Length: 54
Image (cartoon, rainbow, N blue to C red; front, side, top):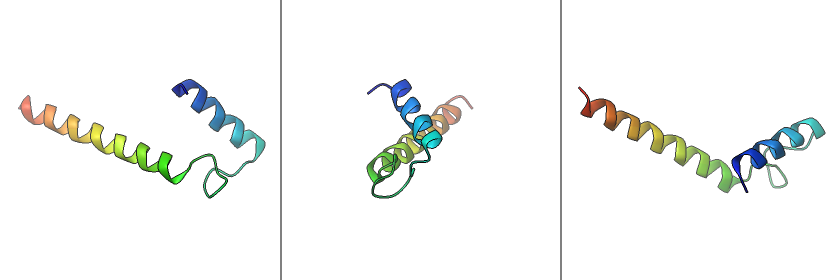
């Protein structure tokens, strides 16, 4: 599923009043863990690049 489709699903869920978190929520535990991991990876890469350019 593309990021655009995922974004649209999230927006639709919010508009429909569906749960975002929890067992039946739009964001599963796995999805939240993947998002957090990706965010951390991006920060670590950013820090390495900044340190390299000093």
